[in-house]
Image 1: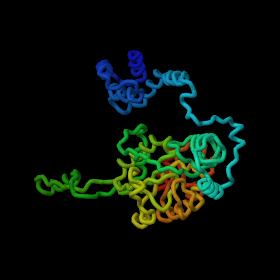
Image 2 (image 1 turned 180 degrees about the horizontal axis):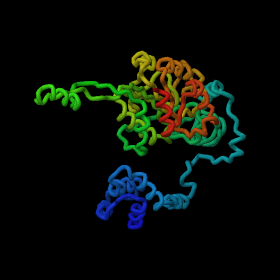
Image 3 (image 1 turned 180 degrees about the vertical axis):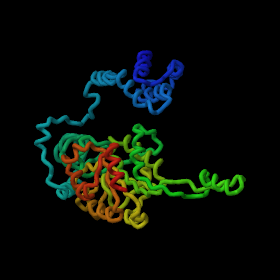
Image 4 (image 1 turned 90 degrees about the horizontal axis):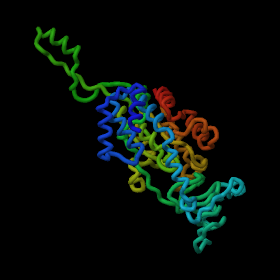
Length: 391
């Protein structure tokens, strides 16, 4: 199987040698990786490809040779009884049943009803349509379905329809050292560049050295200058958790590229929408927050503001005081976004959601209006356009 794979790589134009192929076999014999397709991909690429210009050719050969391998895992999953994979109290509802379930009639009514249920309920419930519990069609609880509810006691999102989450959730920091899957992200970010010489004079200035040596009767006269750095200042705000879990990989690639391209880079996290505070470290986001007002006063208007998020949420989180899914915000998120716009006139929003979905998602349409249509897709083309807009 691997001999055919090696031949496929060679046919694609990757100049891999027999010695490199034997190195791959030796690594597999030593069990450097096993039972992990992604780890095998990186191992094979590291041993067979010596020039990053051939990465794309290798990817084509790899995809063609191993096409269909994922179907094996799907077949194994299909053999497992559905009951084993479903929570005991979870109900499977048809599309017709879901369509019959009506929301309570708005955010204010939802919160008011939750307060009443908390005051009245005395025991555990499952499978109903009124009380706080599991399964069923109640707006309050976990493992059920309701078009507009409060999620309580459920670790991850299922239907992504909750307008508030009762539980404390822990998010993971984005990795700024991840190896870029799309190397051109760096090239796209380089459109936002303005070089200046900073720091100690430690880089040889060859033309000036030659001129000074000639003027010094041939005696060597070294001339040094400070190193050139990208002088552009960037403030990066990253949405984390919830629906953004689907986009962690591409966000890590962007974050890693930004850290390498911009010397003056400050980053903060938020969840869904920006409110009165943000945080630097997701492990301490409940104890160490930074006031958004303080950020506005600290970083001058010459910073470029880049916001990364899918803008996919309940519209209440943008337009309503108290609409935040995790806490009670005194002022609506739209107010805070207007303040960010005023503080940093050169701003963009990068959205990892496919652009064709934007018009069908109310919260994305609302966000685009607030930021004056300065939203771009988190693709190479979108990043390129966003960097042009920031210049």
